[in-house]
Length: 428
Image (cartoon, rainbow, N blue to C red):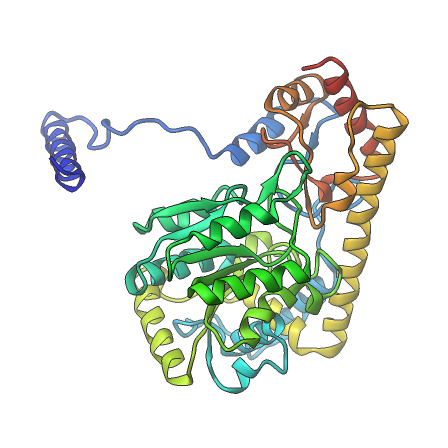
């Protein structure tokens, strides 16, 4: 029996079982297995239940204030006040593709005001439900209209495979992170992409790679671009941290702009969760750069067909905040300044942690924490060491050793350094 027939038989069996349950007064869903929460949410739950005053959450990827509190940008509060004072605003449904001005400004933010693709109308941008929703929409579009294998980094955001497998696409990995150097396995990456099937989709993180904090150099990005274009590989960029790596919005978008400048096609999922702190507002965008304006119109029409039976049209409030900031010069400049301040603090926390480990004489070389960039560091801690740190020091992080640098403050760095030193010293 082939897998398709097997799946059909299992579905019929489950359906028959459910019908019997209904007839006997039982639950229609009693046959469902209980599955654990995704790992990061399990960490969040465990942290919330911990009553220790020393507890520290370095798991979930959110930017915190110096004292570890949720952080809302002043410019976001200003934008919300403007919206609240706008008596002409209403709560009518948006178009299927979202706020037109938001889409235009988002495309310019990621591609540049002078992008030839924008000037030639080769870009279609739709408002998405944050980065996840934008990635999901892109994956669904590809599954329906470009059914190719997807290659993702061997270390990546844990949700990435789900976007593609859930719509039936085959997912393979390419080498990315080198645990021996705590850096980029560039040779492995190039070898794997060289052997990828022609026309395949390649998922790339534009900057601030999650979870490793390791990005290619501009020279390496150019070599990746040349290789991918020579093999006809289709880039799908995930841009969740623009402005939070270098502190410069244009610099952090430069890698994907290399791909757009050559006239080729690509997909770009944007998120405003991290760089504007709009996590719960779920604000994002999906841009698809096409060969011609005519193709872009066709692509947008097909995206509408996918959006309509899903969420029909996106929410207003978060995208209105982003639009207000992006279109106002003073607020945009304030936001840009905020990003520089936030980035500088991330760099400072990295340096302080490395210095604290050195001062304690912690075995091993921890300099990679300073070399890595963005919100995350792949520390190199083992799952057993992470378990020890959580149990004995009430510090919560991913079992793979990833820490959210943005969750640290000057007063909590010593606590983390003590925990790492103890875990390493005890040989856990």
